[in-house]
Image (cartoon, rainbow, N blue to C red; front, top):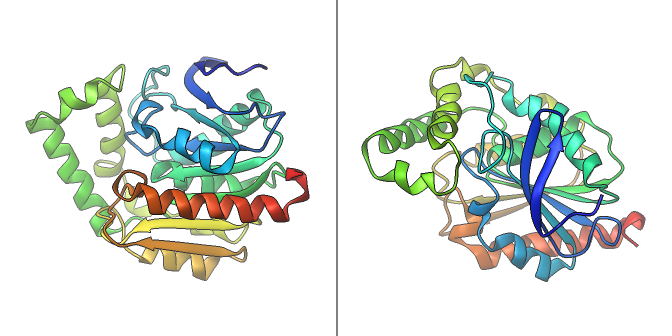
Length: 267
């Protein structure tokens, strides 16, 4: 299919908003960007555009169901919502856009989804994964920060500020935070997928990440057989692409260049 600069993908009952920046998937490698737990197409800002300019790749960005202007989801979300996204929806997205070769670039929830996908699909089209602030296990700091977010959402001007980005901001905010705070999320663990990842991995994490500690990085280093590169960024917290954009862009673009240079499918 021809991807427009922006539009919607129809995947069964789901209608997912997207942006396509740069060359089409049949013309160049594509970086597929997977947003955070409260993100969407618009909340990436200009980072996808800058990543396209730095790498020459096409960059495809989409909002998962329940986010941005995409179709809603049934609440409450199940404990397996990231697993379901990686196993059911993401394969349909990659097929629908005609992906030939590229990388997954995920942030927070999106990074976890990318790890699940890479660990459960031997997809020759995926040459590597970039994980910004990934979660592989649930830590006390994660739950505490989500509780702080929920309090701010319910008691400050955060709700109206978020409403410009999401069609149903309450469903987005409650749907995400409820599954972490009210569900049995302590049992959530992705380490079983890490040993099955067969492509190079880059982890980008802020030293001050309020949602996870360096234990997340250590788990990847302990469990993965694939090459694991790490960029631990001083001065950044949970969103390195916003808090340290220049160094984050440099780390990702250099990793993309190395992966594509060594992978014959990119030529």
